[in-house]
Amino acid sequence: MLKRILFLTALLISACVTVNIYFPAAAVERAADQIVKETWGGPSDPAKAAPKPQSYNTNAPMRLAALSFISEAHAQEADINVSNPAIRALKDSIKERSNLIKPFMDRGNIGIAQDGLLAIRSADGLNLKERAETKQLVDAENRDRENLYGEIAKANNISKESIPRIKTIFARSWLDQAQSGWWIQDAQGTWRRK
Image (cartoon, rainbow, N blue to C red):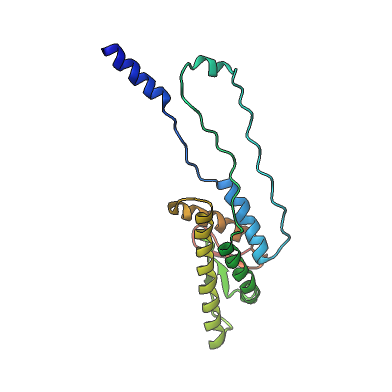
């Protein structure tokens, strides 16, 4: 009886499949770089093909030595969907607004914060109307960026808990692709010209 229980337990344990849910960071990075280039200017690079999974040698010594029934799941590199209607609308909105924001960035009134969102860093040289305009532009831009990250997660079945990771990856792209002379904020919160 004990042998049967041990045998069944060993069989059940060896038949378990562990599925590793991972965050497709590299694919999100590529998507972020592409979206930032598309919306804020610069040449758009053609999408890079995802690497093909490596072949699996079933005769490998380790495979033969592990006499079990454990199944292995191999994940392919994710291809991030960034072209559904909601994402396209957000990208178009960001792109249209960028030409209105850039003059304020060139003058140093608006900068890119460490989280990749825009911030009003100085009202110097702005009249009352321009101050209101910069606030409206920054608020609308930040709202669209936040919504974009959520839509990318939704379109790619990425959990809501991973949206901050998407935002962090996009922040790097916004900061890295900022034009020379624009104000950016470093990890310590200090503003500097790029």
